Each structure stands twice: as C-alpha cells, then as structure tokens.
Amino acid sequence: MKYLYLASLTTLALLSCSKEEIKPATTDNIIITNGYNFEPSLLTCNLGDTIYFELESNHNAIEVTEENYNSNSSSPLIDGFQFGFGDSGFIVANEYKTYYYVCAPHLPQMKAIIVVE
Image 1: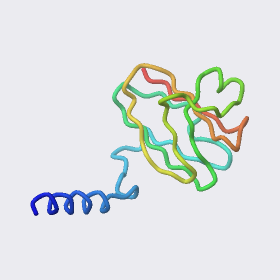
Image 2: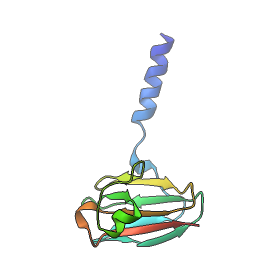
Image 3: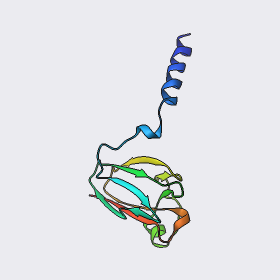
C-alpha cells in the first residue's frame, strides 16, 4: 500500500509539470527564432549560465560539430542538445566551449553559435 501511494504521488508530480512553467529569471540568455534566423546569432555567456530557447513551430535547434556547422550539415553532435519543432527549453553552459547549432530544414541560412567564456 505504501508503494502504491508513493507511486501515485510521483506520477502526479510528473504529470503536473509542463514546459510553460519553465520561465527564465533573466532575459540575458534567451534565444528566439525570428523568420529564418536565431536571435541572437552569436550569444556569449559565462560558465554556469542557463540559456533558454523559445522556438517557433516550424523551427528546431540541433547542436552540431564545428565541421558540420561549416558544411551546413544537420547531423547531430553525439550527446549534444536538441530541441524539437516549437519547443521551449534550456541548457546549462557547464563547460568552456563553443556550441554550434542549426535549424535542420532551414540550412544554410539558419544557424548560430554560443560561446561560453
């Protein structure tokens, strides 16, 4: 009985969460889509910052390697971030690096970079 009660509470907690509840505390690191562009196209942030994505319904965001970015390929980076069409979500810049990402159906125009300093 105790197990059933805990399982019910866990399920209720998971079902009560939604993407709409994740709202950025600051507007410094928000990436949006505008037409066929990510804005900003170059975001510079600090280690540990949270970067929020708010995508329109016809856009996705896929992290790619620098090589794939330069060759306009949407082949995803293994263990990289991916946001589906119209998704909102976030990543945490947990290492010093440059993130390259693209919108697959709108290459070569729609791609952008995040630099973590």
